[in-house]
Length: 139
Image (cartoon, rainbow, N blue to C red; front, side, top):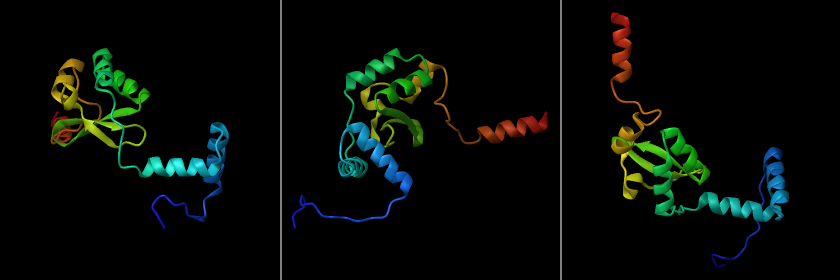
């Protein structure tokens, strides 16, 4: 049997999931089996589409804050994630898969921190929480 041959698969699914599949199929005018195949194919795919560099550069230039940038990126199917060593990466949204390092398109984390006058939201630096707690106890 070749890799492209179809095979019948039977599985138990919760009714809630079956209802969601039916709703997606109805909304898209597709048979439920096609919705399942497409969803599985996209979910299991190891390749993630990279955005056109000019799109990300435009979104970067128009953003006035981290929040503006994240909102604009999400509208286009991407999101920023902060990795180890303060490296920003572009991830697919909503799959949250790594796409590329943001510095490959120009600005790095330090550049954006200076521009937005703030660290990346949610960034935690070792020792900062302890120092704040200690200073509150001492005072």
